[in-house]
Structures are given as C-alpha cells and as structure tokens.
Amino acid sequence: MNQHTDVILVRHGVTDWNQARRFQGQIDIPLNESGREQARLTGRRFAESRAAQPVHRVLASDLSRARDTGAAIAHACGLDLQIEPLWRERHYGMFEGQTHDDLQQTAAQAYQRWRAREPDFALPGGGESLDVFNARVHRALAALVQEYARQTVVVATHGGVLDCVYRIAAGLDLQAPRHFDLKNASFNHIRWDGQAFSIINWGDVSHLPEALDDIEAKG
Image (tube, rainbow, N blue to C red; front, side, top):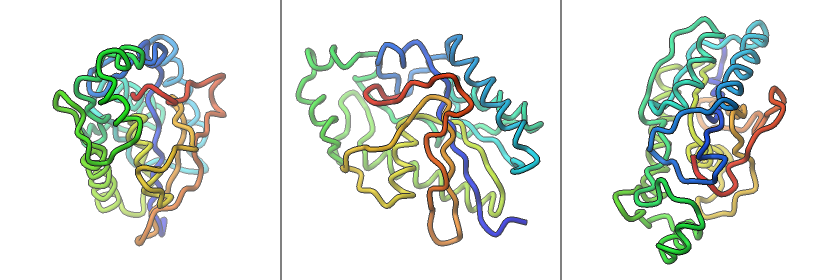
C-alpha cells in the first residue's frame, strides 16, 4: 500500500474553441477529432503503464470535453468513471464564447483586469473571481486526498484548474506570472504526503505527436 496519495491530472483533449483561442469556461464544448485521438492516446499510455503504476480511480469534470477524455482513460484502466463537478473549469462570465480580440474591443477594462490576475475580480456576467475559483480547486483536492488516501487517482479536468493546482503544489502566488505548461491531454503528476503536495512531473506530453498549450485561451 502506498504511503502517499498520487494524483495525475490530465487536461482534456483539444477542441475547436481551444484552437480558435476562444474562452470556453463552463460552456460545454466537445472534443474535436484531434481531441478524441488525444484522449485515445492518453488512455493507451495509462494502459501501458498499469503494471508500473496501477490506477485505482478515474474522476472527471462533468463538462463533456473532460468527461470524454476521462472515459477513454477509465476504459483503458478497466475502471468506472466518476463525475465530480468541482473539477469544472472556471466560470468566465461574459468572456465565455469570445476571443481575446473580441474582448479587447468590447470589454477592454475587464479584460485587462483579468490579464493582471486580480484575485478578487469577479468576471462580469456571473463569472468567478480567481480567489473563489482557487478555493473550489482547494476543496476538490482536499476531498480527493481524504477519500482516496494512499491510492493513485487520475482526474480529467481543465487548463484553469491545472493552473491553480500547480500553484498550490508549488507554493506559487495566484498573481505570479505563469512559467509552466498547460497543454491539452498532458500528464501532470502531484503527490500528497499527508502534510503537503509536491510536483512529481508536469506538462508531460511524450505520448502525443503534438499538444496545444493554454497560453491565452482558458479551457
């Protein structure tokens, strides 16, 4: 039995809106053909590594791009997929459905405040602030390590969630510039030792021919 809890977070496969650098947020945009292939390759990687690191649980956000990515992984691991809405992407309010160019024209002040990563700025149109979103990710992680202690758990989730997870595990401030990758279908492995998280491996896309980074668009 493990003396620690391993959490492997996988960003969902690519979508048409990812490729267009369009904010998805909590709009339920499906995987495109490339994203479905990424999900298949991700599942194959887990199947090939089962002997070295068995997976005990597979969880996913309830948004279909993450849910379908998680389903491919769960199938490869011979497990049922468990849906957990806490792992949803950030709610981006009026930003959802728009591109960065759109927002610079129609909501320049709000867009600049978002880019400045103001923690208490609630995105207009019912969106979450960074503080509120980060607190939700904290709750999701705390619930996971409590319920699945000393197991290996895979979570299919979103770029914004991964941004928060990295900062939690690395002790990086919410307002600090991002220097780490958030690529579609990437492996992001953290470990809980009972006291704190540490980063084991991050942004690993060695199982993919290519992967889009979440440099601008959030999804």
